[in-house]
Amino acid sequence: VDPLRPRVRTDITVTELDGEAVIYDEGSGDLHHLNAPATLVLGLCDGSATVEEMSAAIAEAFGQPVGEVTVQVSALVEELRGSKVLADSHEGLG
Amino acid sequence: VTVRVGGRHLTIRTTSEAFGGWLAETVATDAIEGTEPDRVAYSIVVGEQSAVGRPVHVVYRGGSEILRATDLTRIATCILGELDTYGLGDRDDALHLAGSLVFVDGRAVLGPAFLHPVLGRMGRRALRAGIVWAPAAALSIDLSSGAASPPSLGLSIPPRALERLVGLMPDVAGEPEPWAIDPSRVKAIVLFGSDPIEPPAPTRAETLRELAERSLNLHKVGGRGLVALGRFVEDATCSRSGWVGGDGWLHVLRAAARGDERPGRGRSRPARRYAIRGSEDTPPAR
Figure 1 (cartoon, rainbow over the protein chains, first blue to last red):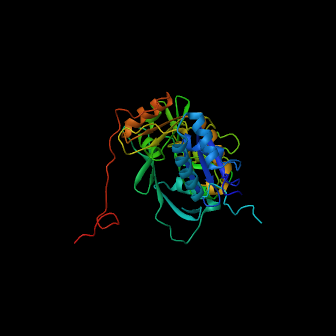
Figure 2 (cartoon, each protein chain N blue to C red):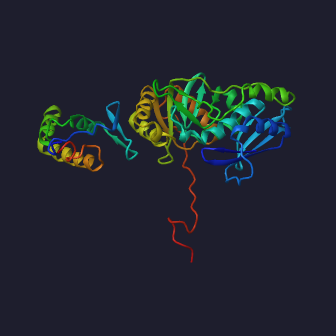
Figure 3 (tube, rainbow over the protein chains, first blue to last red):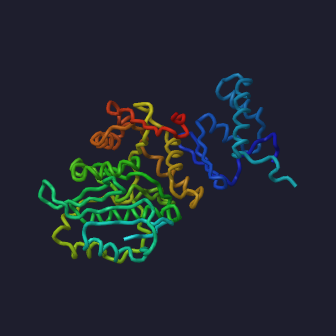
């Protein structure tokens, strides 16, 4: 996994309702709830884009300053990484 | 009678020798002897005289009344459903949740589990209000369709056990009363919220998370349980109500079945809070 291009773990269950996601991690038993903006970011975490690229796309789509969006997306990605929702950067190496 | 279900020992006592004999035969496969029951126990009073003239039967969980009915098979179904609930956490045939599945004029509504004894104590008053409820404060979500139904009994019960009970005790068996037992799409989900008094309606995703947290066996069925629960929630109107008191819940359930997102509006009141001096939250007494 490219540590600069976040990717959602493939072994967790994500269910979306009305644009909001609920995530279940069978390994840990943890449940997570993401509001609509966070779910949008989660959907972009497919391993193809960097945080900066995701932020630029969101900023353009919603007409928001890219700097502000980048700060929020970065914080969310770090939080999701800490919650083990995103694949570990060591995964798939070697 | 003492039975072992889900690793727990549960003792049921009854005032009726005939009913006790029937129960002992019915749960014989799961019955145990010579062990100390733990603190959860049930008491069943059979044939209590009532003001309406018909014998009334009452089920108690611990010291709390959970069902009052003139139909003895309803009492029997209730106690079997209650006992079965303790084994739901070990099963993987469906996603099992704690909650009260009720039908309001034929529309399925899911309410908090504590509604079960609230309705049970009302007995026929709730039935006359057009509300029927499931035998136990639990429901099963089908893993394929997301449809809800009362859990199928995991206890080993002899066939036609309820019919045999009516044959044994025809004088006090009473007239059959309805249960909510049909698998169904749920029209509305009412979550409980003690603060604030009139809490805002939760999103469907919030509802999904809260129900998942309340599930008894998500760890057994894994992610497919969450997916099934998502199907269960996706078409329902989700709401939250504060505490509204006994009859207030009849109003809340009827309003929720009509699609009201704030069914407790104007009726909710703060829950009373109690604390035990010397607990972790309070300084020790001097």
